[in-house]
Image 1 (cartoon, rainbow, N blue to C red):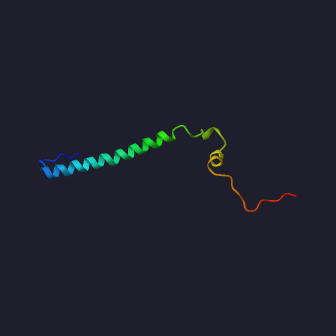
Image 2 (cartoon, rainbow, N blue to C red; image 1 turned 90 degrees about the horizontal axis):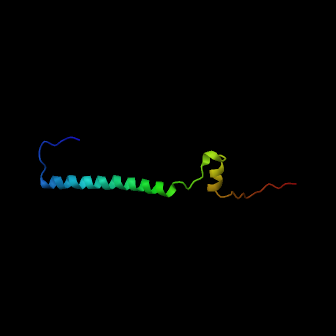
Image 3 (cartoon, rainbow, N blue to C red; image 1 turned 30 degrees about the vertical axis):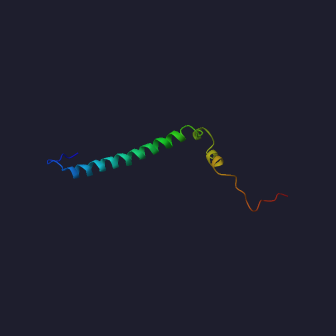
Amino acid sequence: MQKISYPLNERDRRIVRMWRLGALCFYGSILAGTLLYAALHWGQEVDYASVEPTAHAKMVSPPAVHARTPVSH
């Protein structure tokens, strides 16, 4: 970070503090959201590497209802 060679006046220091607070809140909220997402989704899924490849699709999507079903004779 570049060091400023002259002192800032009170108004400029207030602006810098507000920017620092805003940046901290912004990146903190991203971090909190990421942690919340990870906590809610950690370990709830099946280990898909050990089951058939279409298992996730079968669990997520409802069974398809076709308008025309083949008729067997």
